[in-house]
Length: 270
Image (cartoon, rainbow, N blue to C red; front, side):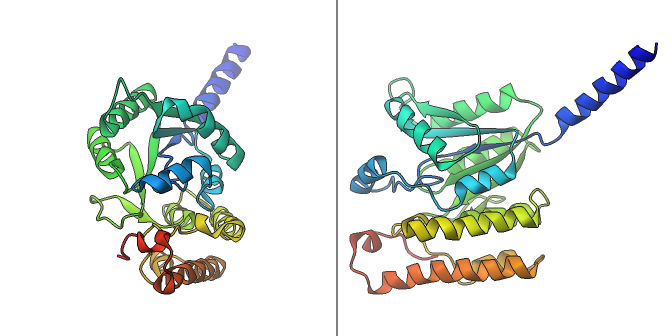
């Protein structure tokens, strides 16, 4: 009887533990975590050959400690190996990579909708954070998915590349620190973890400033990070927000005097 009782207690404890942190991330790749510029042919080719991750994104995904990470990419399957190696080198946590069969599913929205449907259906116990960008159809696909699975989408974050208006309930972001602040504000990320993400943004950008805010991407509104801190703040986080705003501001100011095609093609500042 004693053994049976202990077994029951252990089983209940394991069940409770398994129910914790059932939060998965589903993420796009191009122009969400990888600098690509899918809207411009020559830049797309360069982004396929010279691979760079947006500053701090790998650290953000690690700090969120998801129960699973699925990258759903519109890239063709012949790039699957290259993408997998790239994401691994950047330090993203364990992930599944889904790429597109151009012959079987030519439409990106159709492909992504079907793939996301499969991921949600296969894991009915998890809630999800969806991360994408506004260069193609992520906002629309994510909106439909959240309507189909009410209550299971904890947040939708869309990187502002073109500066488009988003459906209600979706949050725009310009750097990984934006998402960290919103997750901290939501109580799913500690202040220390948010700080680590912010420092990673600056460290990665110091090595390659194009990974902070590429010339083709929209500039954020002034003091956009401090606006995220309006309802909750800490001195260390506010100081880091000022540093990141300053670094991004310098890049945006440089566009005003540059004749580089990368800046000339950039989306307008919202």
